[in-house]
Amino acid sequence: MSSIPLPLKGACRCGRVEIEVSKAPICTAACHCPGCQKMSSSAYSLTAMVPADGFAVTQGETVVGGAHGEQLHHQFCDHCKTWMFTRVAGVDWFVNVRPTMLEDATWFRPFMETYTRTKMPFAATGAVRSFDEFPEMEELEPLLHEYLAWAEAGET
Image (cartoon, rainbow, N blue to C red; front, side):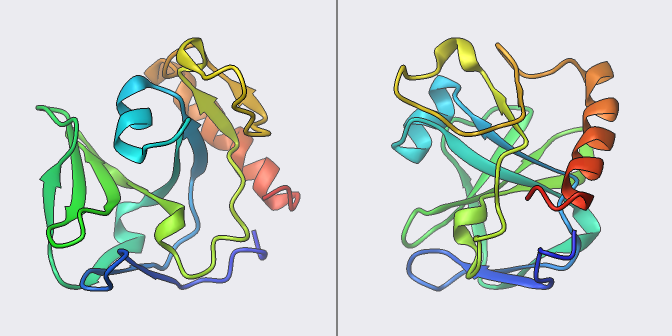
């Protein structure tokens, strides 16, 4: 994973909230679910799953917004409303960072794509693995190992 230039710094569109990623992602993905399509105003959202201890908001504060509930806590800049990252309740060991917030996202490529059953017909991500919905929790650990091998081979 030497192709990922750590630390990665980023910001929301207005620059009031800044973030830093100091550890390599444990997986990357594109999500085609209707919620992500609406929140990103696009065919899909992108995410880099970063270890929680390798992620920090270094300036400003975020607010919870978007399609949220008891489990999903989507974090936005309160001023420009940029969707920056997501925390999942009960899964505190990683943060889903929107890679487009980063100053350099040229290394990013989605390893997996989720919710392909609601994928727009023209949308192509180049992902290695595809799932009709989100993978089951028991599928996650092998997927993370597969991602690491893929990333170490320089595929990102």
